[in-house]
View 1: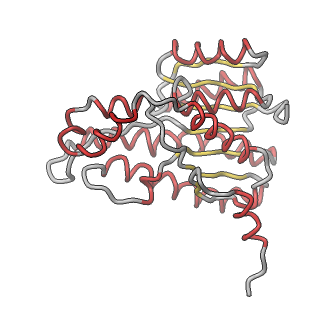
View 2 (view 1 turned 90 degrees about the vertical axis):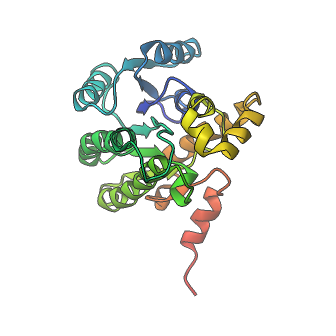
Length: 266
C-alpha cells in the first residue's frame, strides 16, 4: 500500500482509462474521488474499489463548470482529506471535419473540456499542494498532441494545449517539490472511441480511422488499460519526479529517461 494516506481525484473516472487509473491508484492505497458527469458510472467504479477494500467517493460533476469543480474539490477534501494526487482524464474526440466550415461553437466546447477543465482544477489544487510541499498531477493527453491529422483540429489543439500547460506548470511548481506529467494512455477502444465509430462526421472525414477502430473494437484491451493505470502509479510514486514536466507515451522507458537525464553532457 505505497499510497496509504494519499488522496486522489480522477476526472473522467467512470469508464475506460479513467476507471483503470482510479482502480490502480486505489490498489496502491490511495483514497480516490471519482468524478464524471454520470453518477451511475462512478458509483459502479466506487463499488469495485470498496469491494477490494479501498476507499472511494463518487461525485457527479461537469468539469467544465467552475462551480462543479469547486464542489468536487470541496466534497473530496471534506470526506477524504487534502488532495495529493490529481489525474485529468476527461476528454472528447469531436467535432470532426476541416477547419474551413467548422462549427466553431462546438469546436470551442471541446476546448472547454480539454483546456478549461484542467486549468480549473490545477489553478485551485496547485497552490494548496505547493503550500503543503506535497502533490503530483498527471494530465492524460494523447499522441495527437505531437501529430497533424486533417479533420481533427479540435482534438489535436486540445491535447497539444494540455502538454504545454504541463510544461509551464512544471517550471512553476518545481521549487515546492511538486511534479506534473502528461501522458498518452495508449490505444484502447474506449467509450469515446466507440462514439467516434458511430459519428457521421468521423465516418465522412476520417474513414480510415473509423475502419481501423471497427476492426479491433471487440478486442480485449484489459492489458493496455492495466498498463496505463500502472504508468500513472509509477509517475505518482515520486521515483520519476526529476522528469517533471515531461510527456510520455506507453512505449517510453521511464527508467531509461531518468538515467539519460542524470548522465553528464559530453
